[in-house]
Image (tube, rainbow, N blue to C red; front, top):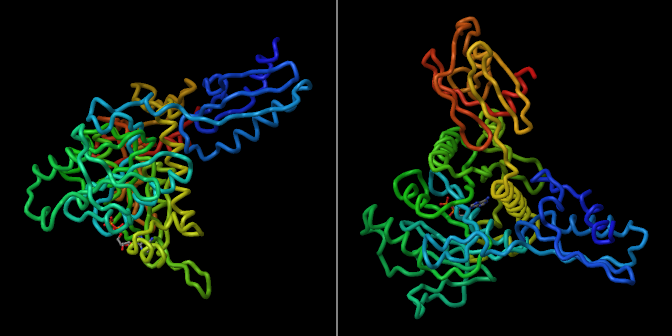
Length: 446
Ligand code: ADP
């Protein structure tokens, strides 16, 4: 084996934790060179410059190759796939070099959606990505308050595209930057949609790894049209911990499901307040919503952000809290790291949903990515339903008497719900069953 191949062979020991394959067979290792003096150099090209485990990959690669007896010096260059490899040019000239669009949404206003969107963008930049933010809220644009760009006037270039503003390296566009006084109130729905669409697609975004789309609150026509106009890679839903907000999250998941946009994270904002004296976490609006999300939808990436006075203080003063660093920033950095990894899985095929089907005579058959089949009877799965009709919300008390479920019950429809669950409508007329894949697999026998 020649030395270059020895290098490749040993690097196969590094498995990408999200894609579940080694970095050599994923094609990440490039330009392997070994000279006569035993100096080794190669490039590891990741799927995104914002990969949160980039440094870990580098250190492991250096250590592994350093173990080769003839290797005297190892130099690893980390890079990322070019942005142009996933262009959105067909959608609008301004988006030509934008690789990935991430939507941030909420069902109600005032839950902290824009704060999450803006800080997610700056956290992605901190991880090493080129980022832009589009504030799509015509009725209440908040981006102009949350950032402090030096220039506040937008100009149209010779190519007809509008130049975005910029603050601390992140490109910005908001209706608030282009409208005069009182513009939005006089506009009706279809007009708003047209204006927003035009602003998004004719802004000269340039080369971006991520464009964060701060959607207007709600799940109405404006949101639907906008999310259909541009291919959104993934969505993050922001909510607050009140029990009523849980309904909002479900609505949000359903909207993105309809659009085939995977929800990669749910943020429960203003989740608790940590007292500066006793350091106890006070959950002012109750607890349990996150647990329910995991139980009912299998959403694995849910985050809590506490009420932190410095978030609103800095935000109102035009500085995203991520730029100030410190403990508050870490909440958003964690969200950004998770979003980057989930998006990479989606774009590079690491996210394999199991299939769930009803087979007469066998029951519900779940087939996982490795081809293994797991079976559970339809009646047992119906009895395991955790929806609000079958289990009392928050207390967890069962409301469905198991003996009332007929042994010959069967599903009428089985549909994927979000990334991690299926929705089943049953022959007894019960339609609100949602089962995370993990939960079915736990119940099913191999
Ligand atoms: P939305 O976009 O959902 O309407 P905003 O992001 O504009 O909500 O936030 C509403 C207000 O709440 C802002 O003043 C913001 O600074 C504040 N805020 C948001 N998140 C937090 C938090 N975790 N702690 C304290 N204040 C917050």
